[in-house]
Amino acid sequence: MKVIKEGGHRLFENDPETAQYVSELLTRLRRDGMDAVRALSGQFDDWSPKNFELSESQIAEAIAQCPPQLRQDTAFCQGNVRRFAQEQLKMFRPMEIEGPPGVWLGHKHIPISSVGSYVPGGRYPMFGSAQMSIIPAKVAGVQTVVGCTPPVKGSGYFPATINAMKQAGADRIFVLGGVPAMALMAFGMGEVVPVDILCGAGNKFVAEAKRQLFGQCGIDLLAGPTEIAIIADDSADPSLVACDLLGQAEHDPASGQLCVCLSEKFAHEVLAEVKRQLPLLPTREIAGQSWASHSKVYVAESQEEAVALSDDYAPEHLELHVADPAFYFDRLKNYGSLFVGEETTVAYGDKSIGTNHILPTSRSARYTGGVWVGKFLKTVTYQRMTPAASLQIGEITARQCDVERMAAHAVTARVRVARYQPKTTVQ
Image (cartoon, rainbow, N blue to C red; front, top):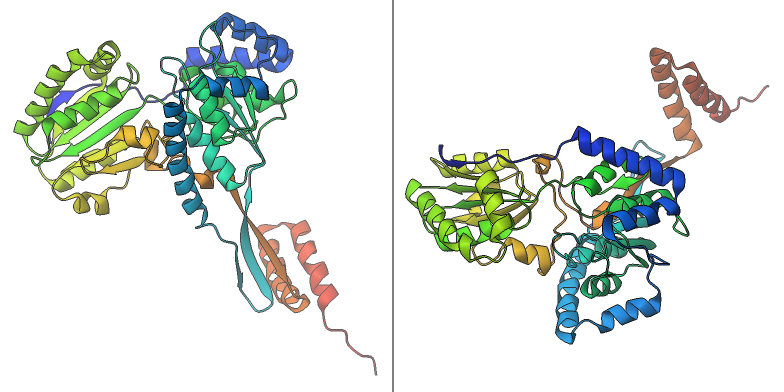
């Protein structure tokens, strides 16, 4: 491997200052309830309406503000996400087998009862995020989805976000952001029942709140700064590769980019294209910071080394701009979502194509995938047996418990052995 450009990449970590700050906020919110929610929303977002929850008439008003083309496009995107989630759901089937004679073992899938969906705003009104957490939950059979989205500072909601949340299936919609929103959903405040799982992306304070609230409820995953990796050989178009790298760089000054090339010549062509394209972007200030600080460009000596470099980075998004995509498709292991060929790009996955964009970052793709319909289902097991099977299993279980010195466990087995022993007839 040859390093052409080496930038840092800030992994998600428990920053002590952020952790302490969020802990203090959560303590205050748990103690003071809606009074704290209102005070903090006013402090952070200049937003303190009579009700944070939108009524049906307010939701209808927000939807009416969206141009027909926007509503139509949103419906198209959400239809793709819903269709993909419905197909994923088909893989979940109840199962039952007979183990030892007279013993039946099985599993079934139960939807989580309630989900808190956070739809981020902040630097960009990312209304497309609504479908990524709400639709899979509703397809899974979740009864109640509570949605929170931050206000446009001091001036209320972003209509496209409210439209997206409603059309995705949110049962309740609150215009509330940041740590107060996470606390509202997790603790249950006002008329909100505590949710069973928190889902959705957000800034570092939202991510830290999710981390600290885990246990109070479940969470989907912890997502740090977004990232992209591209493997590109000499058959690729350097201008397209550079375009896609910058497409992710505009997210955040801490976004990460990795480009693994198969020749030094191509690597320098990509760098030249980045230099040419960056000044033309309206978001060049953010993208420029990100590219300067957190981008990496490597030259791999072989396809195998390109795979190894990508797997070590374990990117959230991975694009393949190569002549032989099957080679990489069969060997790559660590990524959140894979974009095969120049015809597709991360923005398609983020907005419209149907896969989910809530994905693992900061190398967590080594051990988890992203949000999908299965995130909202609990796979539970059960067992049943005949008296004869209980007698046989009980004798073995009791002896195992004796070895472990768990006397009370052994008793629960032996009372069944005694209960189901064949009764002897006295002559």
